[in-house]
Length: 72
Image 1 (tube, rainbow, N blue to C red):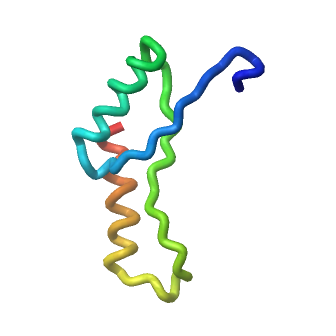
Image 2: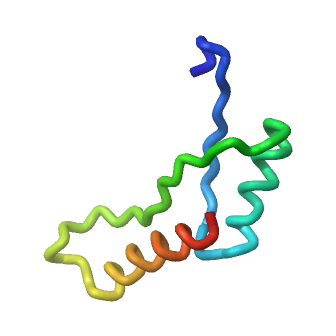
């Protein structure tokens, strides 16, 4: 991306925390002067096989994605 004149910044943020999610916009404006788009990749990392995953962990996965969608 830099080779063609672009620049990107990766951010690790707890998107369940609404203040942290809002801080992403502030950071983008600080870094770039404005915000033109977002690549939304919110997720939870849990390397266990599905058959070893509890319903609570599955609920966490769905909840993080759903809450991140609302905040971003």
